[in-house]
Length: 282
Image 1 (cartoon, one colour):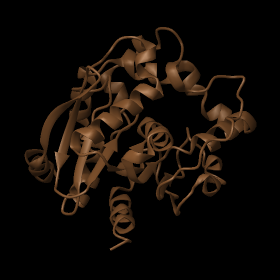
Image 2 (image 1 turned 60 degrees about the horizontal axis):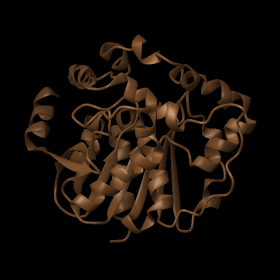
Image 3 (image 1 turned 90 degrees about the horizontal axis):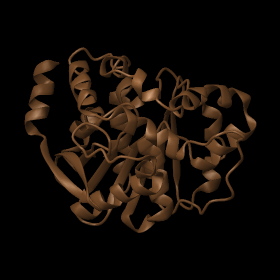
Image 4 (image 1 turned 120 degrees about the vertical axis):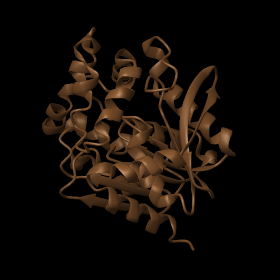
């Protein structure tokens, strides 16, 4: 496995792009239509390695480090991590590589991708979301489902002043089961800003008393949503009725034995599903 990872890392191109003065690091592999991949918490671009390998023969796969993480800039202040700023980073990345993309997001990257799809649909051809319900469904569950309220209690902790002081790179990498990848995660997290990571929650995660969002515009592009059902933070009830908020075709794939990090827990299935779905128009 280590030799395979080494070959992958040797093939990947690295670079930086500008988002209104914030420098965003990216890793790229392959040629073809752009697939922009956006990670969540706690993670970095490397989470997409298996999907990048699988798609690279047909697509230009670009995975970014979102602001605050690894090699990207770490601006100070909670407001710098609002979804509108994160979405602007995604749009800047798409423009850097040509103006339109297939957008793929997980966790906070999923939240950012939903936001970008709703506010800048002209830049997105297709949307792939991993383990992050549509904001309409998430707000509904937080407002009405005590189980989801309890599952989101960790976010209340993250929103507390000084919560980042209790974090270490080693603890943040506890979820990584790949023995070869784990040291890379510890190294990336040691380069990251823990306060910035939690600013995502302080800036944009809903707080009690929870209220359902008002109706949002329908998502204008085709959507593939993949959800590991053993996700203890994002319960599957929020997936219900997602099809009502779509303007085009919507494909939902649930994976019973996968947890929150579905792109790694079920890497081959996720990669094959993405390839199949992206190739359905051929």
